[in-house]
Length: 215
Image (cartoon, rainbow, N blue to C red):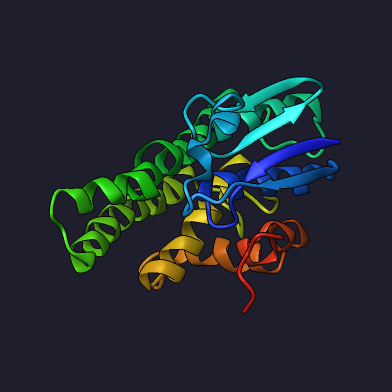
């Protein structure tokens, strides 16, 4: 069985959990407590030199970087597909995923927010920093999805794919941590509603994880 080294609230780990659930692949969670600094321990650094989550262990191999893991899963388990067949459509899906994974999420993760605190920002300033980048990214995503012109409710059609694996965790974080209103982003709001009703997204949700705090 695959082992996913994960933290319940990590957006990067969240997106890989969604992909695993969509593929119906059996896996087990190995929690890494980012708040306690467990990712910095030598035994974990041996698994992931960046000291980040997620890490997927499979067949004696250790895979890192969420988008690389998800694309490997799509190649190894092609049904259901997470990328369309058309090359232009594939590029559009990858671009939407990258808006979050490469541009928005990294500026709001724990180590960056701690660096912002280290520069003297108070908690209000840190939250303002995160909200600004998230809102800017959502504005771009909404336009990208509109321009692609595909019917939802998911990002690029009636079924979830790579973009949804990446966008849905950011929508959760935006609302849960920063109370960002999705009303100005109707395509993203529709995606969020569809994800909340989908079994794979429910199983992958942060609050469904074994290391999530008890309510």
